[in-house]
Length: 294
Image (cartoon, rainbow, N blue to C red; front, side):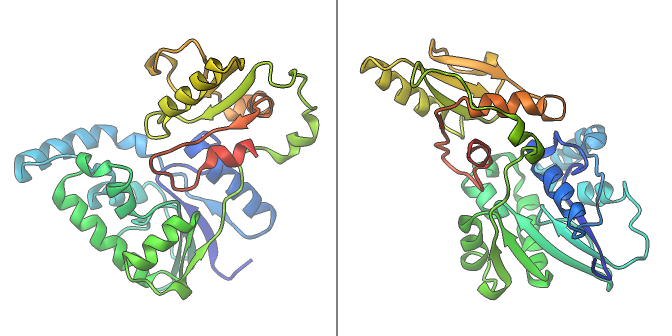
């Protein structure tokens, strides 16, 4: 282990398997087993919900705009104060370009492990409309400064790496691409026997994700309808989305949310039953669901 305590940090708690689809949880778990990571900061953004309403109201009154609380200095400073970092030397592995916030201590090192830059979030993911202009400008300015002073920026996709180099002007020697692992428990893999579904009866197209509009579930349904018109039995199995919000289709088999902490085996068994895992996103940082299907 390094002389620095290597700590995983994000907007959320990486010690919980339900955080961000479980990816930080399994990274932290593997990192501890390999003596690479010391711990993960248990940050609880949900505890700041009441403050968020106050912040938005104040922003609306004073600046004539609201939105973007999660990118604001007020939020990030309050969030990091939920934990005591002490005076020990720390090496952060940060999922979020604005963490850690504020002035970095001389005995801190910071590395970023991101799925997308804020510019990509605002422009490609379409989040810009929900963020006040002043907050957005401050966040982008701070993001650039953080990249400049970071030890390295590790990206979970080549798309994000290209953004860091081309849009932020960070030298490519400092930017790396490392594909994440799938958010499943590898100890259960050998326990799952091959599925007994008859070949293509029906053809099972798997869809995993909460944001079904960005991940283009309607397009997948068009594909399924086309297959059906060619006399192919087909169903679209949907995991993670709110079933009541989905488009109406007789081809959808909506399973809804699966708690990976309590139902990991069931999740893996269901994913194994897919003939194809499908993801046709309009914008996508890493395609975690496809990694799970592999």
